[in-house]
Length: 161
Image (cartoon, rainbow, N blue to C red; front, side, top):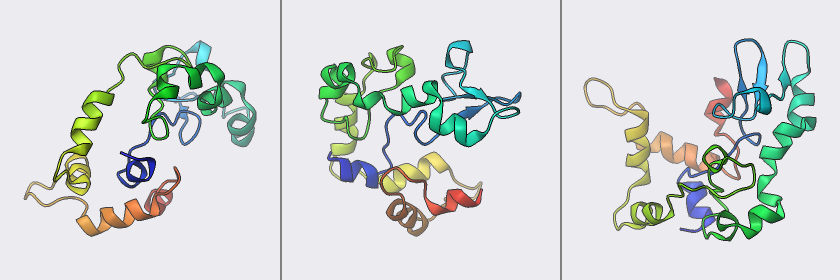
């Protein structure tokens, strides 16, 4: 699968500090909901400006920029054909720039390369269905979201939440 197909299919890799951060009930900020703890602490929204945390905090930057590190580029994730739309999970790698030991690439290729694979149906299965069996999101809605969702930006419908 090429990066454009992956983006269209909604496949993103690690987005810690790039598209998401995690905010604890006490206002503490972390680069990802899986990276919560003292060593991942990036600041607190109760006494720091969000923009400063997002743009200047070293912890957030570390996870945002891991794909640019030489050790990542030379590692198995950096050399992988899926690196443009994956990057592996930093939590499972136990290292901001290391390789993901649970890399699903062999399974990934089988699932998405199958003849007749329907990304819309797959997304509908994830979103769910009403008790009457109707999908919460129609094929047309999902197609529109996928068209809007380019270059790692959230679809516009997410901005209204």
